[in-house]
Image (cartoon, rainbow, N blue to C red; front, top):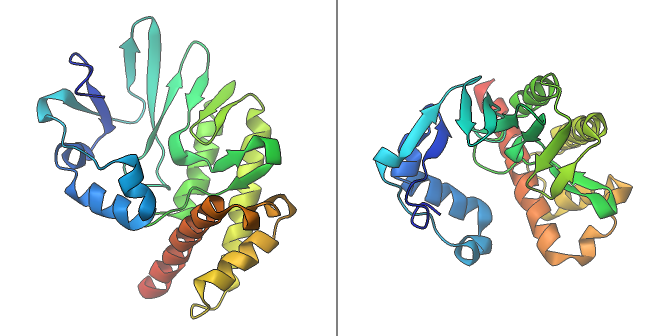
Amino acid sequence: MIERLPNATILVYRGGGKHIANPQRLSEGAEMVLGPLYRLWGEMKAAPADRIREVVDGEVISVGGNRLKMLYSPGHAPFHMSVLELESRSLFTGDSVGMYVQERGTLWPASPLPSFRYEDSMETMGELQAEAPRRLLIPHYGPQSDVSGLFELNRRTYMAWHDLLGREPEQKGMAEVVKDIIGSDPSYSWIPADELTRWVITMHVTGFRQYFSDLRKAA
């Protein structure tokens, strides 16, 4: 996009600009997380440092007739931010909420490797809801007007994954753990027949399990 939009500036949360100017670590992490999808979607290119601007929590940027409020929203990743359009109160959540397949009533956490943090994610959801958005513009998949309902579904789902995966033995195989997660929620009943979605679920279970592994190492 930066190659095709010569006047555009990349906004990134404070501290993250170095990873856009030199995306080697991001690329390595993304390839580890995405596996075969990484090559399908394309690798990251370095952006010119003079086209990157770092922002901070609460900063308001004017773009055309819109005022955009930057909101630090860690949990999914350490430099993650969301953006609130102040007039319409439309919140671009990014991955601060889970992946929601509305037509199936299915949601799962956005919890991939390598840096998912459950406590940060739960705190972020509360802080974003306190901004009183009127709609959520979520990348997975589409706009949502039932703001309180979707936040509540996220909390229930994140808590359910936390409780279930926290009880799973560390030595238990990933395939069995994923099977337990899929069997834990009736809205997941369609997933076993969908190979790609099953793989995506595995990716997010892996991030959650790494979170618990990090907790054990720190104890």
